[in-house]
Each structure stands twice: as structure tokens, then as C-alpha cells.
Length: 103
Image 1: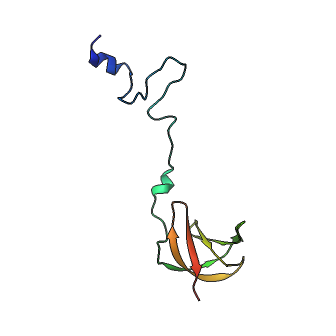
Image 2: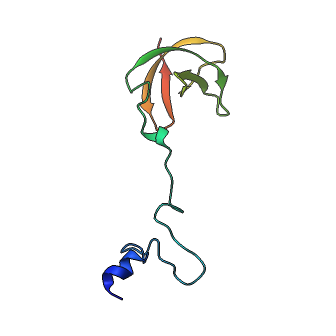
Image 3: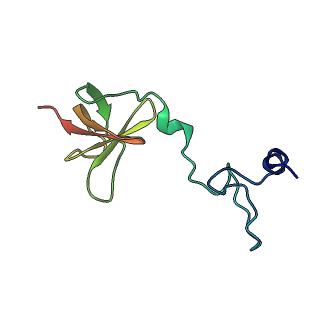
């Protein structure tokens, strides 16, 4: 068997992914690794420095107000449920943003 045919038969890549190691476990290039949801890479509806008006829908366990901008969660320190407030976005993460009350 030539090296080329050996590679074609699923020996895996240079790191051993896809190769059967004889222990009943099989690593696969597309399985078993960390999966990142596509929403992680999507454009966020806010960016740091934006000022937005929101309604605080709930309060998180640590006391921060929770609002949403186009379905994207924004945590607001010191805001109370039911308040309509103006918020300056201070940080944007993959799945939420952090804002502060604008006086």
C-alpha cells in the first residue's frame, strides 16, 4: 500500500484526528471539538459608546437590570424592573452587552 492510498483510507490528518487509535475511540475532525454558535460572530445591534433607550424587563440575580435591544441582552447596573432609561453601552461581549445609566 502506498502512502497516498494510506492517506485516502482515513488515517487522519497530521495531528491524528480521524484516526482510530485502537482503543475503541475514534476522533473525528468535525466531532468532539468545541462548537461555537454562529450567533457568536453575528453583528451586534449595539457597540461600545452607543446610547440607547430601553425598558428594564427583569433584574438579574446580582441586581443588574436586564433590557434587550433587538433581542440582544443588555445588563444595566442600578436599573429597576419596569423603568424606561437611557443607557450608554460600555462593553459588548459575544452574547450580551453592559451599559450604565445616563443622567
